[in-house]
Length: 163
Image (cartoon, rainbow, N blue to C red; front, side, top):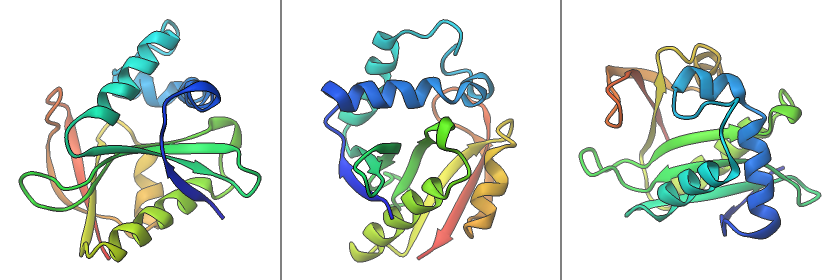
């Protein structure tokens, strides 16, 4: 069981999010968004704040039954072109991998958006992020497009799940 709360990006929560980001070096290497060998806490905090404070966006943290932060997701609540909610980033603590936390966070997000009237949820997975593709497929997300991402023009699979 995972509960979701809006991120505060302060104190111990920020410490946990920094640790989670550092626990996923393969993601950062494949995305090119950060250099996992040299990224600083200030860079991670700036990235988290930029995404959380962007118009129409929200960052949520997932907590296990003991209250420990096990992952987080950055959301675009309503895409300006297609009107669907999007998961912009999902990171689970790499030290806790393969325990169902990612699935639980996604299930909670799907429940949330379904209760808000969304009919589908979308996300983009970089083509080079081959580790993430089977995860999303197992959760029922299907490719609907292949296009460059908006930030850097990287080849990206657009996935969708009907809710």
